[in-house]
Length: 531
Image (cartoon, rainbow, N blue to C red; front, side):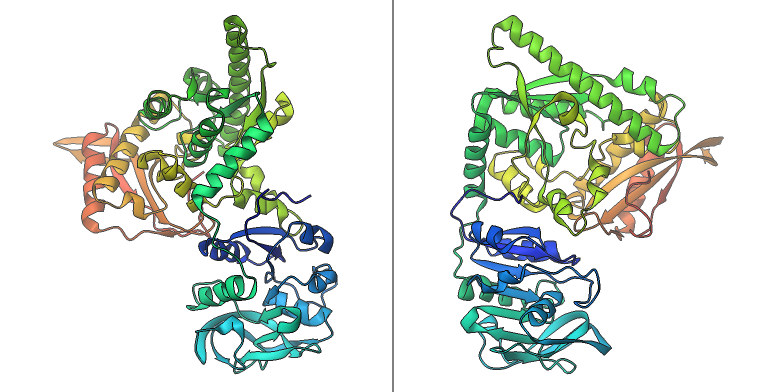
């Protein structure tokens, strides 16, 4: 069953047919301050109507409408009286189901094109006679369904846009949501406002108030526990829950010994001293490091850290129960709810065609395994938000910039940035190098302009010279990438002066390092993290 927002907000549903751009459609609509929600492609029409959307978008997708396993919508979607916009594959589906003709083109249309607009369609209000567009399709609509008219054409497609205003059905053979269609956002705005009649009522202030109301209804007077990592997602979740239920929330912060320098101090200062959120700090560094002795396989490291985290978290919760009982505050039977910083992209992965096991990769980061083991009910107050929206919420909730705009940090911490065995000495080397990287990136104003910037310690030693002495020391790799969502990434062309300064400081200030390299690999084929 699809989860949705229990509000009277304007809403656009997006049926996901597997396009790589589905999330981009959702983001473009939200940029119009209109709430958008991605649902499965085969959602029953009755269920879609019950969600009370102002409009429905059929996403693109890689299939052909005639493929044996091609995804198809419930045909009743087209007769609900709700405006529908089909994009690319969504247009082909609309034509196919309503009696038009779709044929495989012997000339695939991929990349930039020129759209010639005709007939004064509402979709193209204020846009002009021709615009640059981005196409990605092999099939073409060669005959429109009865009642439709052509609204635009390209050199290869006589029906690059079609519409039946009487039935509120519209379709585009190109992608208005991508940056390569420069005026595509205006087309989306025309659909959302002129055709669907949406209001601009999706704001971060309204979201926070509604999220607080939902949490209060779900939780009642029960207690909630949250595994706080100090990252953006869990930090915003903590601040939001504290606003909603105050001292019913207790955060557990586990120091696994694999944190950045002074990380535990920063988290305790921000959440305990500044926000006065109940925080239980558990120093389990020795336990984790002992288990990691002699382990060099990266996947084994992750499994060890994940398993031990569950044990430490479970024990910390039991201690909280004992403390509450001793204080006479355990009248509600303990902690029934576990809060997680699940974001909308994680939710979308489970909506997508055939599901997507990718969310398993992040299970430890979101306290994977705990709900089943400990019989918690989940509270996920930011599950409707994209990453940039989470940051907006954090700022509105008063979180400091150092947390809201901090770069992603892996759940297993520095263990996956130390290739080979994790030892106290190797952790010391990497922490010292990492501190210099973060410091120089911030001083130079580059830290907040990139996706991630960090140091990696290699199990490689090389000859060097310091003073008159021969050295045989460790190698640090500097990794700095730009990315929109972490799915793809490119290395950042940092100024030579900044690279030189970082290298010089690491070699001169970090005992045990005599060589710094710069990683100039893209993702794919490389990953952002080294393990």
